[in-house]
Length: 443
Image (cartoon, rainbow, N blue to C red; front, side):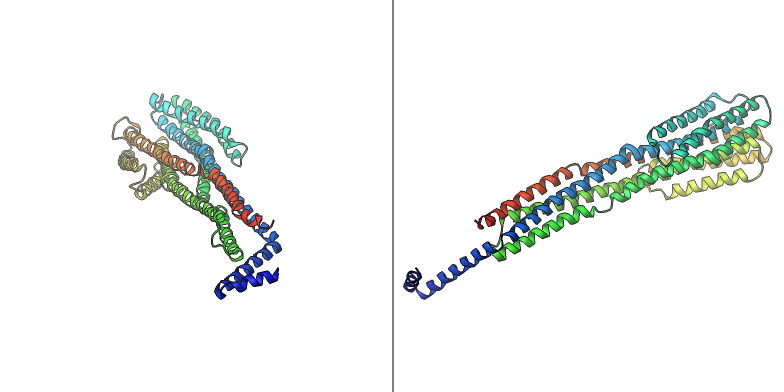
């Protein structure tokens, strides 16, 4: 046999004989390698399969977690924060309205009485909403404290009114006691509750804008492993490209790119929902509360006929903070038009407040009361109502912005989780298809 092969080689030209020898040696080396390392190729295949599937599972899990967090924000955290804000505002409006009704003496005007009743009813309704959503969380004691204090507050207010109708001066003391209960106990609880609810939104937004590193690193490692495996196969089998592994690599690159792009768009939407939604909503909510605090101080000064600067200091501090918020508000953001309206109403209110103080300094209580609670378009009541109405409309605009951007951020990720599983499975199939011809050489 060897002699026959030697004769055949002798019959060839020197160049052809050399080529034949090289081909025979190369085939022998390949067979020897194939028979000597089948376990290594199987191990490479299993690693690639595992990394491709892991990339899909990790990405799908990360996306599902992020979508779930956004859904919780839309369905629970944001409505909870809005309810807490409405509770805080309703309690403040009730306290301010109680003082306004008291100033008129005797039977208060029906509109003023209705505003107080409406505010108390809204506060009670929001307490029910909060209780239904609480689920025994850490803020239960706050809700319980407000729920316990509200009927006590209303009872003291009614006692104050009864004494006021009878012409008894002690009514002013009762009203002051009720306001102290509201300002010293109930409103701080409502404020803490509102801050906790708002913090839940902020925490979700802050976590969402962070890159999903596991969903980025795992596909990236899978791509690196696939490239390394192709280099390994090209050296051992002298083939430049493996179609199966090449397509699997492309599939993982698509998954990686999809994850990065969709995550970036979702993070941008979440950032917009924070900057154009939750942040201005907090500012407008604070403004609405400050306006009611200033109104309460204004009315209590009249009720008590106080000539000291205590109530004026409270009023000035609250309105100064209001001016700062309005001055720093984004003029191109949602609710900017309402803020301009509120700022103009604040200026007119401050002018009316100064007229009230001027009347009080002259001992003209009736004139001061007319300025503070009269129905005129230039009086304090009209300006407070215009201010509160503008802030309420601004909060609606910013809330819609928050919910709209958050909803879009969630929708951007809708197809990524199932897509990640499909792409990773396809990559695993392509890996198997690419390695199968090499495995067949072991037979």
